[in-house]
Length: 578
Image 1 (cartoon, rainbow, N blue to C red):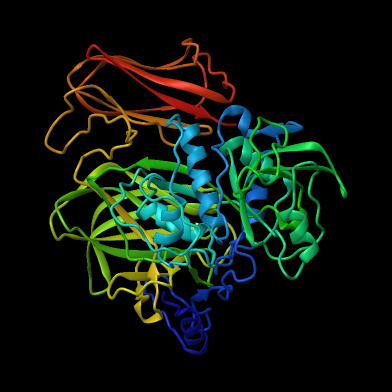
Image 2 (cartoon, rainbow, N blue to C red):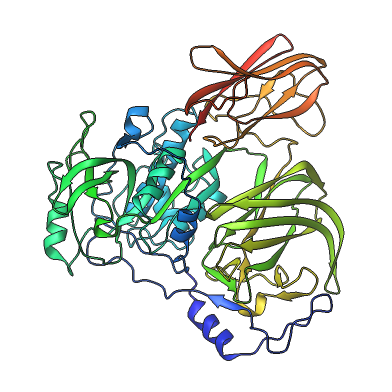
């Protein structure tokens, strides 16, 4: 595992870097771009049943961005429990191994698959703790390590890589089931207000979060947490850094505790004999804890969108370690650029990237040539995107871009942050790649990041198919190759899903003819007709804004997207979360 961050940071702080731009003059006294990275935290050594180690990035501004996005018109009930909707998978047991970060990440992804109508999966926590780039296993980790793995290599099944509560190495050869396409960070080292986390729970389902579960520095609290039986609501006034990762699955404003009333309902990863049922069902393993107690709510996040494994798909990336530091310091707007080479004839479908803050504007450009410091040959662009949270996001091209064997492309991403002055996320943990990563103050004059030991975190999602498969790997489905049309009607999974307020349905018709695309409730009643009429064979897409045929917003809940064409019917489940 490479640890060059401290060396790189001091090199930058003691060196001089001058950027000269002819299209946007920068005064000689302008601030010098550089890195923002926190010192690495110590690995878990005192209590192997915990395991959260905060990442090295600066995320102090996350909670403020989430608070700014809070909707004043949203009514928050006095209590809420995701278990009642069937969105929580069974409690697992990490044993005497600091792998809570892997268990909460697997639980998050499993819940989102349930919400998307994909069924209940038991994903391998062993694969998550052993196969990520930093290889920390039982020594602890965090969600950034996990999402870096899940966006590049994906999740495998527990049956292929069963859990072992020890450092056993990565098991090769398991079939990937799902990959993460979108992940949002709500908070860093600051506890958001209860209203913020409640809003996200309602909108996106179960959340990953962290708390301080005690250790040798607070033995009484550690004992209370270790021996918790579900009969009370936990309360602790200390403000130590979190050392344990769990899932928030609900809340109850009427829970009574030593500091007053109100608390979270959480899912732990210490087995069903620990904790209690906490108000639902017969399975133990849950706990309740007062709002804000023991730093609960720090480093909260959620998976927003997933992709079923597509063997024809590949992600091109140079940032082996993912988002481990941020580059900037000269303003809220900065450009990053990455060069990628096609190893085969394929199609560019998506540009994927990390963001360091809520981004008010993201513009993506794909160029054919970068010569003499000048970009030329614009191949594709997608502009005016915004993201309410820092995290991992993507932009899908309106038309897949065909790439030939060996073709290199240059992907430039202009990012404007809400407040944080370091808009370009970079990787300092993986080996820097020469002639692959640049930054720019203006999109015209580019400076290599190779000398700083950094790679930008801009990735390219390709596929030899014209359409990326989003089918359930358990169910199959027809894909559309570049050379032709599908042999049967195909309806892809909706994206985003769950959604609020808009989702998209993409479908392929095997021949010209009449088409009806509509939204129904689970009782089969028509909610909204999206398409009715004659259409040509090929690929099509339609959006639904969560309204019925009369233009009225429909309530949160599950719905069915349904298409009738070519004598066939296909449907997918949608989850509207307000």
